[in-house]
Image (cartoon, rainbow, N blue to C red):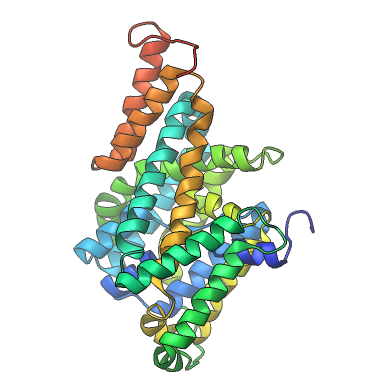
Length: 383
């Protein structure tokens, strides 16, 4: 058990590696869809804890990004959101047990997966630099610069984990400059998640409005790219694609009944936890416990609490997660054709609507056409 789950300062530091992505999306959906904050935080936290126990790795559960963007942008109701979560859970379960996920993992070439990872890295870097780092003006820029330097100096330091130092800096900043907000936020009250029964109408509407746009991203990023990221970071651990699909499916078959948001695994979150020191399931158990405590005891003050921790620091954390994903493309540099395909897939994923599925299809088609000599050349020289 100790090799799979540890609780030490590195796991503690690594536990915050995905907070820059998760927390804004969770809060945004709570407000946009008028969800019960306690239920959302409790179930999200429990999902992290169970995943840490099942995998023994810093394998995250994240909000479904495409669904989150649609819900926040179009103010989709909570009922439809829960229906969409149940619908995508059923779809992923069918793909996992039918062998569809294993087939996709075999068919999609590695260069295309690298392109998807690179495209997600570009998206996260853009979000970090445009939205988070710039959120507090000049003071925020200075704070982000200081945090960036600290993380660089402590990068790879297992004795003094940079992620933990940064979180402590953020708390200190909040105490000094936002004490009044902190005082308002700490007002505990015990609550439990609310039961919810999705209707057939909500499931059908949720499938059409939310699950269909989400499914391509989930197949590419949550399953295939996550499987590849585990191979990259933990080559000694063999995690099958069907297992990833099954835990993804089971989470979404359970969450809606307790008013929890739809979730998925993600290569970005896995890379982020790892980048800040996490090596076992202990990190996501710690991370999930944070959400669980917030949901159980401080859910009524979540709106104020999100303003306490400085967003520029979350932006820097997100940026390091992005860089980790971007660097995975290095192993494609020895073959010019594969590197070109990876970069094309990344650009499509980053710039086009439904870019992940378009990039997946286009990149895979180009690869097999090139393999048959119908398109591009296949030089083995270095680029």
